[in-house]
Amino acid sequence: MLNYKNVTFIKSATGISDAPQAGYKEVLIVGKSNVGKSSLINALCSRNQLAFTSSKPGHTRLLNYYDIDHTFYLVDAPGYGYAKGGIDLDELFAKMMNSYLLEASRLALVLLLIDSRRDFSDNDLEILSYLKQNNKKYFIVITKIDKVNQKEKALVDKRLKELDINKENVYYVSSKETRTLTSLKQAIEKIVQ
Image 1 (tube, helix red, strand yellow):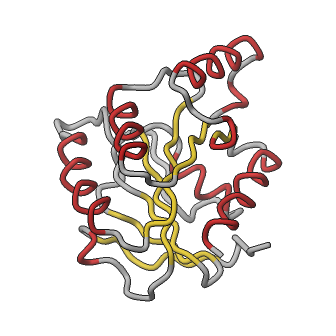
Image 2: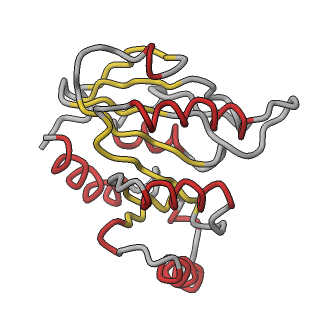
């Protein structure tokens, strides 16, 4: 098993042309600006302040590269959706992701994060459609699962079924319950090793 605690922040890149050159496979994390991307990174790596978590959505504006155990890069993408201060996160995300997804030859996996308390947004559905059409390997990561009850979780399951998402590609996680992260870590490892 990889040692996720052996993690180093490498750099923030403006795009794929500015990416680190080590040649590792990449696991890209995408999702709405308040879905819990930074919390997931911190929980996976058992580090409280590795990735900056903010009460203000839209903090991440660059591609942030983390070296995981000298084996792969975890890449945190800018969020999309809402941000204070008149910043168009959708435009920022689209511009950066269009080139990244087309040109990232080392992209091994995309983690599409969905808040367990929210439905898939139009942006989520667009990304999911793109991933399917372009045969990109992806997992749907349902975040904040500790905040929903069984009935609400059943509604999430129903929605996933409606979207024809294979259960084997779905992971339910909580940054507060580390046991929920084990199967996701193992699944990532199978792909990057």
